[in-house]
Image 1 (tube, one colour):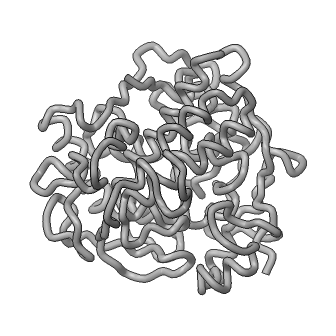
Image 2 (image 1 turned 90 degrees about the vertical axis):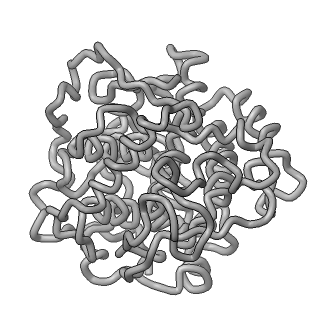
Length: 357
């Protein structure tokens, strides 16, 4: 099955998908000025009160009923995971990986704000935690009211005990708890995906690369893949990885690394973009063995159902070709109005209004 040929839209929400990109309210949009950027700070630097405020808002999102007819969703958090699942083959191992996830982080931040949270999404300082013997020693993985919970097939401590994820694994729609199983050692330092590679050293090499495609490809592996391994999520496949709320701190860090790279030469890097907008069928996911067909059979062991097929993007919407452009359309299937890659390249460009500390 060639997923890249699927373009049919679900009839019930077709009018909100791939429309002319229109910014939402809250001062975010083309022509708006970013006067007071939200600060995104490292998790370990937050006060306990700030940590609890963030975690309480996340639980609120999980307990807020869904308003979109996406396959299998029951609450607003399910909607987020479903959006990632439906885009899985166009946002991984492609040039849209970085801007799409920056836009996705903002989508999540809006839902947190609707639940009363007024801060930015924190980031996991993975470079700092690469010095730990085991990744589960990070302050993120603690129980009680100020952490994301410790190791267990289904969490037994922390604020997410009893929360159920309806989306995943892969294309499946099945109920499952949030759980983790950290491997021995620290994937933020090195792991089986990159034998003999020191992750911090490789990250430093990524930062020396001057073209967007070279940098984004390097960053995709390190720290992106290494960070996902360090999360230890039970349902941590590429399709449904946001089912573990640590996902947001990890991707905030990935986005910060890109943001830092952009700040080195804003004139040429802020709007630098490129790369394929769809996975190469002969490669599929860069980090997985086999081509797209072999990955579907040997790893995913599932196929999209009819409702999912009706929504999965082709991947070239707005581009007019196979290369990612600033006109590439970003859609949440109606949760907010569509945007473009160009809208999210500058973190303080108006559509977005945040910075990292």
